[in-house]
Amino acid sequence: MNALWQVIKREWVLARRIGAGAELGLVFFLILISVVPFAIGADQKLIGRIAPALLWLAALLATLLGLDRLLQADEEDGVVDHLLLSGTPLTLVMATKALAHWLVTGLPLSLAAPLLGLMLAIEPQAMLPLALSLLIGTPALTLIGLIGAALTVSLKRGGLLLSVLVLPLSIPTLIFGATVVKEAAAGRDYSTPLMLLSGVSLLMLVIAPVAAAGALKHARH
Image 1 (cartoon, one colour):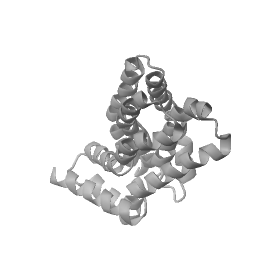
Image 2 (cartoon, helix red, strand yellow):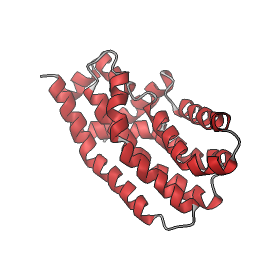
Image 3 (cartoon, helix red, strand yellow):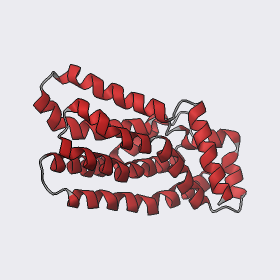
Image 4 (cartoon, one colour):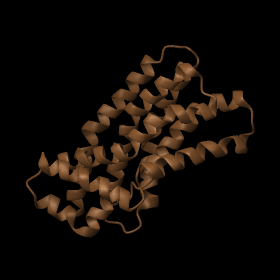
């Protein structure tokens, strides 16, 4: 447990040093939402209809920030080789790194999203479901990104390839997350898409650490 705690502390420090901390994600999130009215006009009804999709798309893009450095810094410093030789289960280490990344990016976005949603004319009754959907769904985005980061860790410029790998796999999460907010804004029951979103996150929680650990081991053979 002490080793895993040290992983979380190290990821937090690295995120702060390379500029991939919570502030950058929130600023990016705010900028993207702020430019939307300039791009599509000041039609509040139109903005309100597309707001759920925009918020989830912004969350995905903000999550991608610094994702290429999730394992790249460890590769450059030789930490990956140390992890492979240590007695700590690599699967748990990968899960811990995903948790650290989510604490730096996903959690702040989830907490700030209702406030930023006011800028996009989201219905008041959809604010809590919006935050809840992001709290449940953004871990899936991080875990999917963990797999992509492990597959591209040996590439010096794997950022573009990482995005190509992650974006298609993130589509179900975006669909279910946006549907939760849309149904809540319309006053309808949103329990079904919320459960499906939870299922995606739980599935990725089981698959992603194992797949990432396997990808790292395979890269050494």
